[in-house]
Image (cartoon, rainbow, N blue to C red; front, top):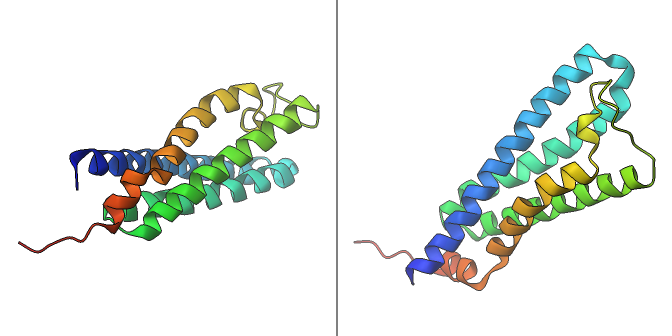
Length: 147
């Protein structure tokens, strides 16, 4: 095992944890928006569900990956892939005119578009690339020898 393998895996784990915390914060804000703006419940509920899925895959994935568990690597891959898919879907819907961002309602900023794509896609893509890399796979597969 080389130092690079551990650094690659730990970088993926750290990014997954940060992303998971970001989506957890978004989930909390979505719950507040559901209570405060019940008329916008459909859109906010969908956004809350997406945030819940992303937080529940990225955070445990990051923790397990840092502990050299292969399931953590899978969680990081699944969570970062889902974040990319959700962001691309949101940007596509915004480009098609099916969503809006007039800053007047609770879910307007969360609906995505090019800003969300520029903010979410790079860290999610880096997390995905680090998690699928061969050094990370080797680091997870390495046997920990008791001293």
